[in-house]
Length: 374
Image (cartoon, rainbow, N blue to C red):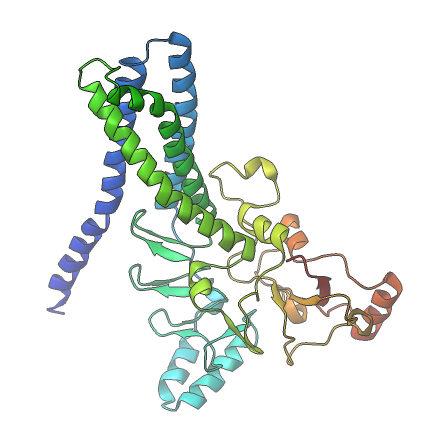
């Protein structure tokens, strides 16, 4: 118990240090507001109409930018549901086993009742020793937060938070609005930046704010544009940053496109199926974060085969493994209608063939083929 005091002090100091990047961004944004609104618009722009238009547009973008940034910072990352945590009896049983294969047998038995399709590189069940739980698909343990995060993308020091299932949409909007914010400042400040070099501005402190405002906004635009484009590509491919670095491993092997449902459904999975909520920092992502429809290019031998009429060479088909596999209701509360639509699609075979296959396999079979939209 003696080291607990120094350890808690150390963790407290670390928490304070983690907020330094956020404070740095806040100070830059506060200065940019002062420089643009007071020094540029109010002090330097003489045309009233131009001043009003600039101020209205600036504040609209500024509000959305700050709102998205706030949501990214203060939205708590989601952790796996209690179904993925080991019971006390399972923990004791696992602790008694000293052989890795025996432990894997126990974990496989528990995972059998859960919608888990990914594995470690060696083919073992993904298990977190720190959190004592079976990791859901796309879930990873964050060493900074010291907890497992659903659909973890990365831990971002600039927001002092893990970017994952609960706030990835907010993070994307934060990048979009911050880029728009910098581009707007750069575009509207350009003519006054030119006047600085042509001696067209009065010799006041405002011209120095205008100069540094243009430089800082243009430099941030370059870095934000590259980061935003990269994450747009990730959304289109339905990958996280971690999955882009190391492709997920399924029972059939590694598959970098294992979670890709095609551009449209990949986008809807992050932003939701109601367009009015897309630009607003309000949570609208589809799913529960613990289970995801999985399109397997290489068929999983442990899963039922697709209908015979769907295997023509002219059509590239995927298996869509829904999270309600084998008649299980997961998660415990039913999916919203919008989530169910994401997990289903029009079968690529004819209605007669589909009806015949349903009669053979039974209504409880959750596996169906869908055409590749990628």
